[in-house]
Image 1 (cartoon, rainbow, N blue to C red):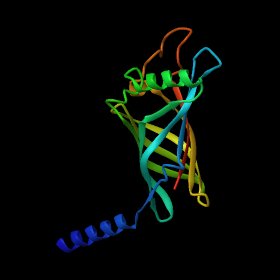
Image 2: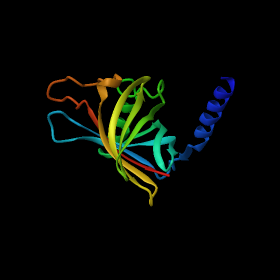
Image 3: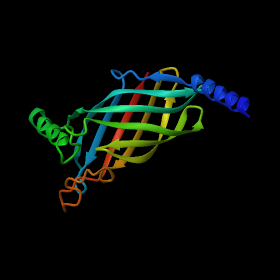
Image 4: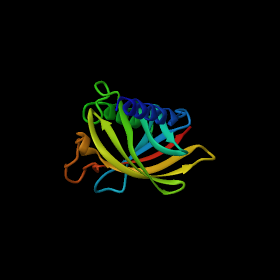
Length: 184
């Protein structure tokens, strides 16, 4: 029995070593965000940067990953210099991301299903303001360019971001959209 346990431990450790860690290129990767007003045809948009991250690859397929987003880097880009400066500061305060207390957000890929050879469905844990919730999204892989692209929306109230959520006529939509490009 002891030999069987040792053999299984060796097999498990060999499998762990077979997984490849693929660090992302944070200078070529980007996250664009957008949020609309509930009752107007306008909204706000900008970007936020990855701090670090990696994919896990096993037997030629992406099977996981872990990504850290630097919330200090969040920027609004839709309002002109003074408006962008004010909105960016507001996004960093406790009404939204409370960046002094929570300087990063994380995405940890828990499951990857291949829909086609270059199209995947991802289930991941997204942590913002210390709150972890599951998200799901589809993504396109380009192995030649070494990129992954995706678009998805989240309900910001699930992470305690409730500012102006229920204010009639000037409410900010609860949905935040993301366009993500990850490059290796």
